[in-house]
Amino acid sequence: MTNYLHQGDLPDGLSFGSSVAVDSEAMGLRFHRDALTVVQLSAGDGDAHVVQLSRPGYDAPNLKRLLVDPTVEKIFHYGRFDIGMFAIHLGVTTTPVYCTKIASKLARTYTDRHGLKDVTKELLSVDISKAQQSSDWGSPTLSPEQLAYAASDVLNLHALKAKLDVMLEREGRMALAKACFQFLPTRALLDVAGWDEVDIFAHG
Image (tube, rainbow, N blue to C red):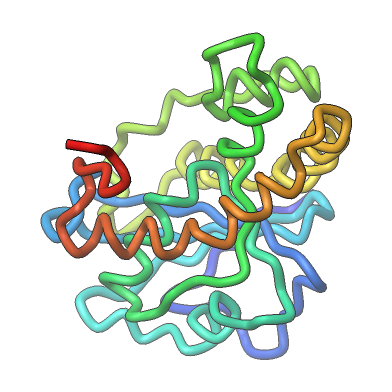
């Protein structure tokens, strides 16, 4: 298992197969205020590729090409934020997508604990650390601890998806989940456009 650090973009010729786990780090959680700084990816093979983005140009053609590739499913945990940040800073609408947080909320209705740490602990018996979550992701040099943290957020998503798919099928909610995943990029674009705190489907 190896964590690879890339400056600016993914290297030419790198393939993740038919599905890739994706996550990102930013300087905060506010659209249009906080910069996107890091994108991490894994094919589910135990390796992680961490891209430290070049700001402010964000010239990352290989990464952008992957995010919009219709033949590669992008697996997120709370993809709503990442997809929105990619739209703002990379100028792409990420599709097709799968979100393990949405899947967890539809399948694991016996709990309200749907954070990545909790879902990974229950379904995979893997305890991941969130100690570096609030560190300085805009630093010119990522620490070994930051690199390991970034990798940990994507290394288990393929295995989580497999577990959650079984539960979704068992509970008869797979079709509903797929519809949610299909709508997710649009939900993220609504966030970016200013409807992040408004439920446009609500009566009021």
